[in-house]
Amino acid sequence: MLERFLEVFSNSKVVAVCGAGLSTASGIPDYRGENGVWVKDPRALAGAHIKNYLADVEIRKNAWRDRLSSPYRGARPNIAHYALDVLVQQGLLDLIVTQNVDGLQRMAGTASKKIVEIHGNINSSLCLSCGHTEPMENTLIRVEEGEEDPRCLIEVDGSICGGVIKSTAISFGQKIDPELIRNVQYSLERCDLILVLGSSLTVNPVASIVVKWVRMGKELGIVNLQPTRYDHLAQYLFHEDVGEILCLLADTLVEFPKVRSH
Image 1 (cartoon, rainbow, N blue to C red):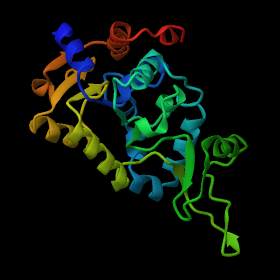
Image 2 (spheres, rainbow, N blue to C red; image 1 turned 180 degrees about the horizontal axis):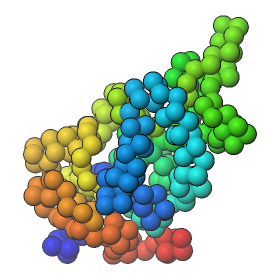
Image 3 (cartoon, rainbow, N blue to C red; image 1 turned 90 degrees about the vertical axis):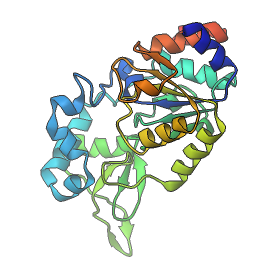
């Protein structure tokens, strides 16, 4: 199956759909795995819902405290991100659709036009009242200086806004930008192979979009340590480390000493 997969990959228009498993080697835990954030800490799951975040000041305080020591802060791309970037640069990968909010694929050097961050990212903070955004690190400095629930300090119509701040990552209950959805749909319509990397395919709309196009005839590859509910739809299935499979792809199809040096 591996030889056939390599042949198909090298001769297809491929869209990669990435999940949390891509970033675990960067020290960022996944959400639903055996040691996932939401499995170990139900409080974190509650805070991931926008209604709870807005309604409960203690949830917001906990969220800001957690961000100070979050593994996201200071995380660096791992070999899987660099291998993906090389595949994009060599024209072997048309688009990376990532459900991750860590921004590591951009940090690996991948051009913005080749990435769709379907759930946004945590590298900026957003005022939910006036819409002002700024680097997340600016807000975290305020938290370090003693603000437990930092509010927006932008002047609006002559007074301080004071709105609730959160990261620009999409929470449960928030709407995803329709333009991003259209971009993903357009790319999947034009591709031959959908390659799911480190995702359990449990979160919509990405899971439902992928399944729709697979049932309309697109080939599916899945690389994920744990089984997914859609393994039976995959022509190419690897319950392997995503970094190892991506390095195998890049090693076989491209000379990429750059990746091995990271």
